[in-house]
Image (cartoon, rainbow, N blue to C red; front, side, top):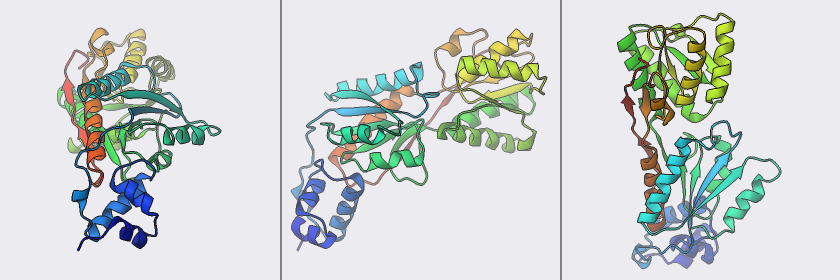
Amino acid sequence: MSITAKELAKKLNLSAAAVSMALNNKPGVSSITRRTIFDAAEKYGYDFSKIPEKQTLTGPLYFVLYKKHGAIVSDTPFFSSLIEGITMECSRENLTIQIKYIYDDEDTISRQIEDLQYSDCSGIILLGTEMNPEDLVPFMELPVPLVVLDTYFETTPCNYVLINNVQGAFLATNYLIRKCKNQPGYLRSSYPISNFAERANGFFKAVRSAGMHTSGSITHSLSPSAEGAYADMKEIILRKEKLATCYFADNDLIAVGAMKALKEFGFKIPEDVAIVGFDNLPISSIIEPGLTTINVPKQYMGQVAVQRILTLINKPKVPPLKIDVSTTLIKRRTV
């Protein structure tokens, strides 16, 4: 004989209302508590046929952009394309989407997240690009399904949709090594986020695969914007630091800024210095020479995030997934 919701509540020392809300995918309980209830329901033989197979959304989905320092998350084509993909998929599914910014301000962050808890949202797609693992915890306690977009934390089980950064950086670096026949340098972001850390892993993995020592790669730390990277690279050249003959850059904006500085000092690209970027932003095909880069299917990432939210709404007991979206190499004229 199957266990009832009331009996399950007693076993878990929870209110019957909390168990009922979780099993029927209603707001009011945290995602962690919801997972605990579903695990126990399976263990004790709860009859899941009592739960409607498909849930009806009572409120919009929220796309929440978390801004910690704003150095990465800004009004760029990358994030515009993510938003476009989310909006297109919501329109296709006849869903309403609202866009909300959360700012990492010590005095107001708790209130900003509390506002989400008492809003009418049915699920949250959270842009985690600038987040640390501890920043994610309060969002996981919200009583709605959550998908984290554009970052991943090993220590925090959650649903993630992100770029396969390691694969992309490996592709770019391997291409540089094959074409240039020299040890590649690394134009590394001075702002440490998880995406860039994964790209560093891919870069050094390719270096090791080519039989080179990672310590032999010249690394410059540059701001992850075109203007900032230009200023930083200019200082490096003026200080007469040793330069590599080819570089992988953490993103296109770093590559573009570095190229501007190099050309200003008379370096020819790609004859003197070859460069590969990452993201395939529109500027990469406009600048001269055109930037070889890694293409990220940005709109598709947004679409996948929406579909994952719908899965969590309709099947709350499914285990969390990390979804890596693969990248491709776009060959232009900087190599």
